[in-house]
Amino acid sequence: MALKGAAKALMTQAGVPVTPGYHGDDQSTDGLQAQAARIGYPVLIKAVAGGGGKGMRRVDAPEDFADALVSAQREGQNAFADPKVLIEKYIEVPRHIEIQLFADSHGHVVHLFERDCSLQRRHQKVIEEAPAPNLPDAIRHAMGAAAVKAAQAIGYRGAGTVEFIVDVSRGIETANFYFMEMNTRLQVEHPVTEAITGVDLVDWQLRVAAGEALPLSQDELRIDGHAFEARLYAEDPQNDFLPVTGTLQRLEFPATARIESAVLQGDAVSVFYDPMIAKIIVHGRDRTQALARMRQALIETRLSGMATNLSFLRRLMSEPDFASAEIDTGFIARHIDTLTQPWPDTPAPTDDPWTEVSGWWPNLPPRAPLYLPQSDADQVAEASGTVTAPMPGKVLDVFVAAGDIVEKGQKLLILSAMKIEHTMKAPRSGTVTAVHAAADQQVADKAILIEITE
Image (tube, rainbow, N blue to C red; front, side, top):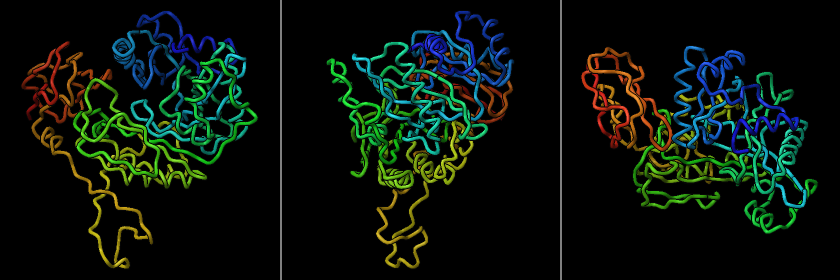
């Protein structure tokens, strides 16, 4: 089930609805491009062994297919030692909803309801919530039954998640859902399921592994309230969410939220691991209360030393469309200009609440910290036309040479770092006066790669 193509074939045999696509053995460029034309653009190219958004490319037109295929295959090879891909139809207005499963060795399979993971950037999840907002009970029950059927079809045992794409282009009430993949493990976002069910999923894993039966039946499982999880990353939302490195000079979390993290204040974030710093989880009696608690937890979180997505998460939790659950996987892209603005500076305290202009309430929680810009490197780079490495990495390909004339935003080279490919683009229009990088070259953080002059 960890191989997407094989999993989809099994699900088709089991009668579970699957996204239209190609999951065959022909991995030639011509063969795959022919399948993309048959399916109809836009399509997704996905590494069969992929995960976490790696090895995934959206293609909108035939002329873009070959380059996207090479990039997806290369990223799949680097991240998973497997360059094979599948092609599937890109659902234009999807929600990403997944079902938490559990199965024991006594033939019992249950689902612990769903999580909505639609808020994503770079095909990776940022916010997860449970239950999925506005999901009709009929669809909830149908998705749960399909997930259980999938687990039964393969004789599954333990914790797992069946992920579905839900086509909401015509609304959620009559939406169709399609099997996307199965994660044969406990996932990053499992705490939101624990919060709404009261179940310790790791405890269940140990019991099932020891041969015990599941502690609860399907009829005994209930949804209690609402929960959110936010992923705090060392990344720069204003630079296409590129991961960053550095030292956590300050890292403090509020006691009101559940925090899962493997780093402490003073630790370094390096290029060798995923850039996630922590998961922040809250629970409320309903979605409105849970959302307010998450926003406050993010405001009370203190972090400095490197660029992070903390300000981005605060704005995300403050976005009116998110509060009204008008969401799909394109939400962040549609609101990117607002979401990537710095969190506003805090006005100076005043002893007179009646002249307070920042939204004073009685018993207002602690203020958010001042936004402190990390540096003015981006402005300097744009003015000078210098392209530097955002982190240590390996140059995969260079597309320009000295003397070439380039336009602002033109693709210059591809850098691989943290097992993700990053396309470096021209910060300004002009003439390439120097190229200091070559394919297969390892480069240091802040190394000058290309110089462009007017």
